[in-house]
Length: 193
Image (cartoon, rainbow, N blue to C red; front, side, top):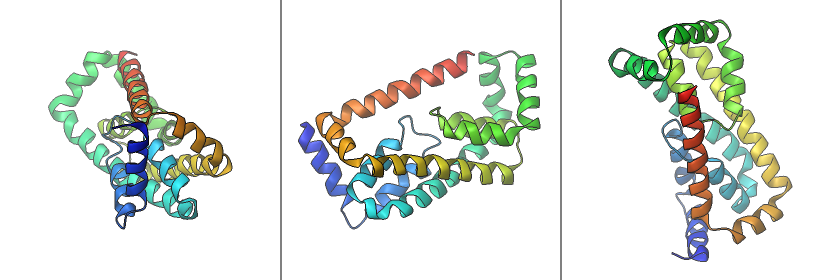
């Protein structure tokens, strides 16, 4: 598929009658996906800037719901494979220190971590592993994603014409592959430290 073919296909999806569902579903699965959803958010906002508020709220809410699934997987996986996976990456003593730190000040870690371009599954699974208080986890995941997506949409609306020109010059595949590479690189660095 050529560059214009991919962009036309994406534009067609954004303007379809099911576009709200097409937008929301990836954010529900964000805790498990390997590519950054900022690309989806940017593209939808560029095509329908009048729906910016909907995109901010629905992406943050969907992301929080997806995070709850990641949290539950982390909490359940600890007993089966979680401990083995963690101890392959770090020592039990280091993990104990990290969980003590996480338990003592998890709110700023969740909030600031959710703003950074780090793999989101890192926060959701580790919160489940550490059995953080679920309600505060959900509140601050929602707030951090709301802030992050609002900032992205503000930037897209402020510089939308330049972003459109940039996106039109690049292949969407190249954007997705670079996002995937960045996610894998950060995931590997996180596991190895």
